[in-house]
Image (cartoon, one colour):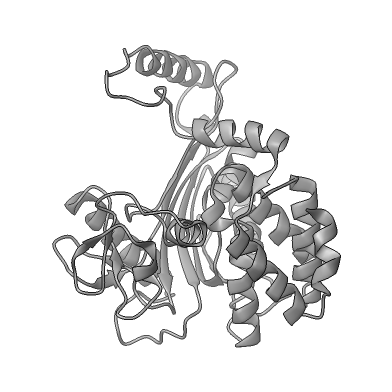
Length: 355
């Protein structure tokens, strides 16, 4: 089914508020999830709500928790998310770090112990809106591993996303690269399973280490694994996410000494830079515009099935389309939403009016 974005937003607000969040926190989380759906990242959208409610029920996600400053030495800031909604605490940490960057020109910010922070690109968009650029490295703890190492047959890592965000110019929009270091995100496999679709070729191993196109092998015993993107290159970046986001933040890595309670805890290392402190802005924008034109003027290869696009363009196209057509929600995800609503005292029938 396709649900109008305004209606899906109302559904999420009702569920998140009923699960214990203040209206302000519910707005932040619902806005974030909706934007993930609008930009085409359904893996990080409304389909995450059932997981969040289970974590609340297990005491692994604590609503109405704000970020806590751990240390502040000027250009280096460390925050603790205290297992609060990641969408809230990461936003709060970014806001403080961006404000500091506008004073100092450069900030290194570490966030630890946040519940699932969602689509990392949202925080890149936060820095872009402030006129600064940002680089983000994220790892995942408290969750069983789901990504194999290069040449490995079982899961040892998680999807460990990275994000790079650069403000645009008068001629060109911002550049936003937001990607998992696995071939696909785990949430995209969940969306594929709920929709009855296969995963892409070469993206998944079954529970015995054999190639598979069946997304369900990632969610049933014996558990399979996602493969890293780019062979050894993606694996190398994922490993550094463990070191940068996990070890250097103090939030832990995936190594087996730490508990895996089935929650999703994110740690994030972020570098925020004010470009005006480095180069003349007219020069920078000229270089960006010339480089973008040079790249996009490349002739399209004979086997290409899409236009040449820079990072961020697929999300803009999805946003434009889904604002008009609505957001696709498969029947399995819809049933899970209804069950989640019922679990927090909402009559599921009241949600059907929004379809």
